[in-house]
Structures are given as structure tokens and as C-alpha cells.
Length: 182
Image 1 (cartoon, helix red, strand yellow):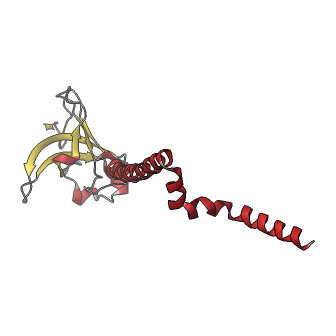
Image 2: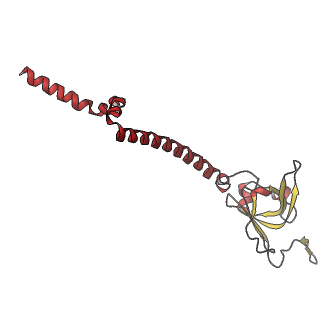
Image 3: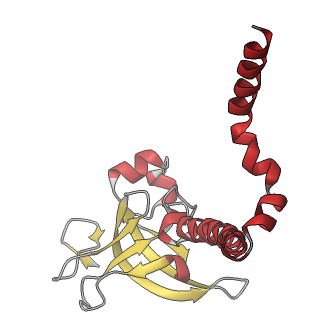
């Protein structure tokens, strides 16, 4: 913070510039500071000193006079497990990514980023794999039965084997019946 003669005090950016926080909804804020704190439940949070960009102010109806301090910043906590430092190699100008929006709510992409959609797809594919394995086991049994005893296979599967042939057999019977009446 600097005080200039004849002016109010101003919060000046460090020489290396401000950091930034990107939210999963695509909006971002300037980061002037961050620290790890615990909430009342004991959950670790990253508490950022943030200055929202105009688009964030409009989207979330931020009241500049009441919601922000005189420098246009506000302290906002986000769960530590939902906040990812993106450039750990640069200790001066930090860039963070939050899986939440400005208000700390999940967005449409939050579940994708934490892998929920992938986990759901993995679960579905496992179920399909189990079903296909059981169908394969049945086919292997049928194949073995066909190789070893075709007569028993035909007896066990008579209905299933003849059902597709029923229209053809019916047609043969009708045509034979017409020949005997002539």
C-alpha cells in the first residue's frame, strides 16, 4: 500500500505483477494475496484477497461499495481441495484454478474436472463388460455342446433354432397342401 501526496492511499501491484484466480466458469479475478485457513468445521480453505474483473462483477451482481473494500478487493475463501495452483514453478506471480465459481458454487464443468463424468462412464463400461462376459460364457458353453453332442444341442435349443424357420416351413406346408388339392 502506498500513499501519494494529495491522494488517497492505493494498493499497488508488486513489481512482478498480480497473481490471478481462474474459475471453472471461465471468469477470473486478480489475486493480491492468499493464505491457508480452516473453517469452523476444520476444513482447509484457501482464503484469497481478490479483485473481480468487470464481467464477474456483472455476472454475480457484486455491489462495489458494499461487497468490496476501498481498493476493490475482498477476502474470499474456497475449499483447498477445489483450488489448484497452476504454476508452482513461479513463486512470485501465482496463478490458481478454482473448480468453483466466484460464489463458491459448482459449475457445469466442476464434475468433469473432478472426474465424476469419467467415473460414471467407467461404472457403465464395467457393467457392460460384465454383461458381455456372461453372454460370452453362455456362447462358450453352447459352442462346446455343439462340438461334443450336436443332437443334444438341437434337442435343448429346438424352439430357438426353428423359430426363424417357421415362416419358411409354414410356406412349404401351404404349398404342399395346394399341390394335394389340385
